[in-house]
Length: 506
Ligand code: BES
Ligand code: MN
Ligand code: ZN
Image 1: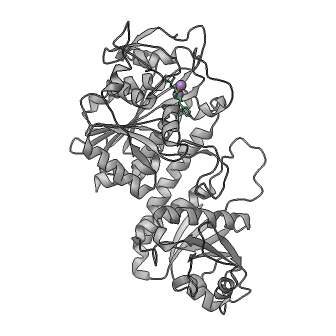
Image 2: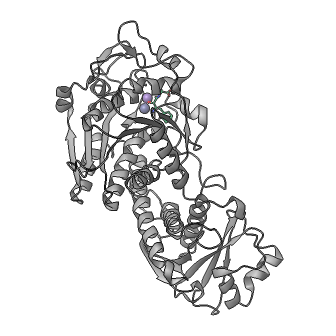
Image 3: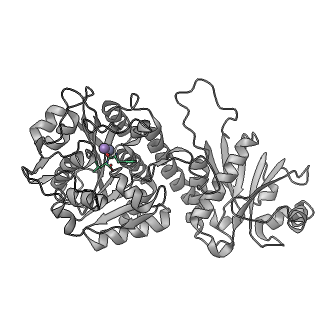
């Protein structure tokens, strides 16, 4: 979809469909909504007075101007209570309006910048949120369907800004929003893509392909032999049960620029998690094609970082493999050795994410980074603790890094919740035969998993985000789900990381 920014009044826009908004409780709309109302001789005020339009969050109303303005349809989207209004409300409203435009068959549509007027947000931030909501709201996973969907996507979206002096900020925000939203859609595609279409080799190929599009990017793919030479016995232990060759993918933005801060992103890339010999129940096992949601977020972020040309050295590490049972598979009780020399007793082959991350975190140290952040669909226990689609669990060894993450979470709208790294979790990982075991007991599973990772994240500030409950939206569209999410992959992490890295470099 092409995205444009125009100066002018939305009431005079030559477009099939225009989107305006309304806060709850407003009886006499002002600004752009007021201008359209006036051009339509008070049609909006009338709807409000009749109670057919309330401005509630999630509400959309369609009006037909019949020549009063150039557009043939007006969509009014409700913004809810002004006191509760956030950038998340902007994304939600923009997504609803965009879907409405598509449902109505509009080829092109335009919108005012929700939140830039009475909402009180910085114009660039508001424009970014509108574009993010629009693109993410229209997202559908179609690549394996032969029949096109009933309604085609609109081809053009225009942001209209009345105050000409604000147009440059709208343009800037819209551009950033488009970059971040499209990178999120890439991550969504990877999560939704079946495991037989998104193998470790497929991910590696895609990483190389994206790298080819940018001068700032470099990519190296380590195969199993390379990994063996590096001593990545933990990563290879998981990989050995699968016929699909594993790949350890390394992407770098601004490699070799020693004057820049270095941030390493690590993403769990289990392209399918059957549990291995500790086999999972078959119900909903198909969801485990999304067990590379961490790697998808890192890949998407690398794309965004390259497009934003951020003055930072960003490294993306994506250990990718399947976790399958076979005659070659690692078994409960086996002991494997990670790259940093630590021996690990495999109590449960389904606790495989931490094993591939162990080697990636050890590998990260060679970049002497200012920070390492890993994202992983790591534990069901985190979902039990924080809920589905509510927040990611955030573990961190340094206050500064945690503060940066929390600030980025606030402005991106991707929620994280700080979790503790108490020493007690370490005790639950004691092993009879090795330095540590890969699972603790029945209780405190999310803390134990983070404490396990901490044994390999040495020599740098480190944060771990458990995104198990955030990567895959289980619910279909409903008032309870933000409209920019659909059932399936969410791409969680791209917005958060892109925001963190933007803040870091500014
Ligand atoms: N990939 C799963 C975690 C998961 C669960 C992600 C639900 C998304 C939704 C992970 O590899 C796993 O199997 N974890 C085990 C760990 C246990 C064996 C200690 C779990 O959470 O049950
Ligand atoms: Mn598992
Ligand atoms: Zn897993």
